[in-house]
Each structure stands twice: as C-alpha cells, then as structure tokens.
Image: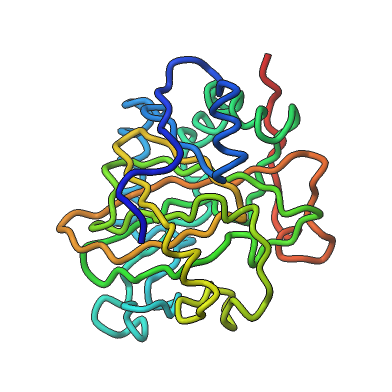
Length: 270
C-alpha cells in the first residue's frame, strides 16, 4: 500500500466551514480530514453512551459473528461470537448524537459539499463502529454505495473518531480519487468487495493511504471512495461514530432498502 501520510492534507477546525482548497481536496481525493472538529465534550458524552450500551448490549446491535468477514467468529455461540461490531440506530440512543449532527460546524461543511438542504438517511451507517481487541474482523475493500439505492451515487459520510485510529487498531485505509474511477462488475466479488487478487485492481490498491485520526478528528468521505480496515491488534477498543448525508434532491429509489427507514431534514445554516 501507499505511504503513511494522506494525500489530502488534514484541516484544523477553526472556522465553521471549508476553504475553497479544502472543498477542492474533497472533490479530487474523495475525502478530507478536519482535526478537532468534535469537541472534547461531544467525545466524552458519546463515549460514555457507547460503553454503557455495549455493556448492556442494548439493541439494535450487529455482532461480529453476523458479518462473515475474515477473522470473525463463525457463530454467535463460538468464542467471541457475541462481540459487538456496531451499535445500530445510534441517532436515537442519546440526544448527544442529535446535537452533533445539528452542530453548525458540521452542517456548514456538509452544505458546502451537498447543497443547502441536507438530509440524513437513518437506513445507512447511523451507528457507532467498534473494533474490539479480541475477535474483531477485517473489512475488505469496498464502496459504501454498493448496497445503497439513491437517484445519484453522491452521498457523504462523516466519521468521528472517539479515540486514536491507525492501521494497527483497525483504522481505515482509503484510495484517493477512487470515487471518480469507473469500475465494472467483474472487479468485485459476489459480496461487492473489490477483489485484491484481480490484476486490474492491484495498481489501484497500491495507491491506498491510511487515515490516521486522533480523538475528535473527523473524516468526510464520498460514498464511492474505496476503503478498508484491518483487525484491531491493540488492547483497547476503538470507537467511531458514523453518519451519512445526502442532498434533498437525491432521494432513495422507491421500494429499495434505502427507502425503508425514515430520514432527517437538517436545518439550514446561515
């Protein structure tokens, strides 16, 4: 894979919006990082809720045994089978998550990427991703749009790190510019993961870079950006809060999974 620095230079959270250069970075690379966008208060409160809901196994959750990814326990009854991979429907778990998605610092940036009317689908992401030190699995190369159905493949995900993230604890890798690449179906396997043993794919994957984040850092990435993550080899669990957003003029296709859950129309920013 590529070097240990991201192609897109991280941005310090000072103003409420992206500069023109930062928007250009997102458009060119398919992602941009903002350092410290999530306040210490947000991160502390979200971490407290996350740990409580993990300890109490508050539904809905996704277990590692249910994903069938490399390294995952085979069944719920296997050792580590009830290791939680995701706390689902996170928006409804505590008011702090609503406060986060309605924060002006976040909404202003989303409106720059998506337009003035921003909608948050509840069907996709809307979760806390966990990578626990034992029984965590690998996530293969994929584009998030693979199972989503909207008029246009133009959605933005917002990934807030509640602690440090780097390759050894299951941090993300991304392929810069992959959101602008054209792929055909044969480059993906039956589960729509990007094949690593496909000769056409290898030069693309060789350009991958790690997304290294600290507590409070936020990754904005396009739904077509190729990304992957390894297992957590450290002793501490990694937590990441992830929501996805679309513009109001890009609705889900009728009858699709994307249209089965509600959505939130977020307030306009001044």
